[in-house]
Length: 113
Image 1 (cartoon, rainbow, N blue to C red):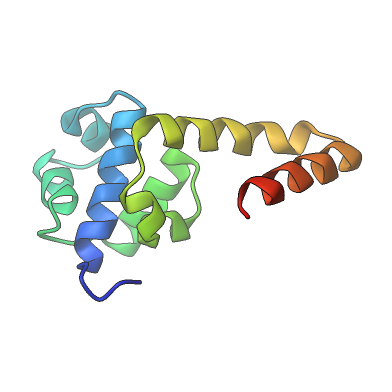
Image 2: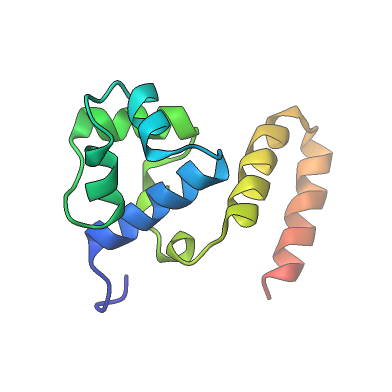
């Protein structure tokens, strides 16, 4: 991680990107996560506060992402469309045969060089 970024801001930005990728308001997300107020979401997204372990677990389950997602700078700068593609790919991968997975791995590896 880069020294220039506050971990709370990285986490908050990831949460905001995920929320917006599902076209949810802060109020709607707070309701889904069983929070009493949307202000908790607002403070987290703005990097002013952090989350509890139990809320963090709910977020990961709700958005179907790994806990590491929230701490990766690469997602800090990602846009909604990229997040949607990644979520769709994650859901499609288990449906593929071993041979198809190898093909996709080879293609992805080529693009990352």
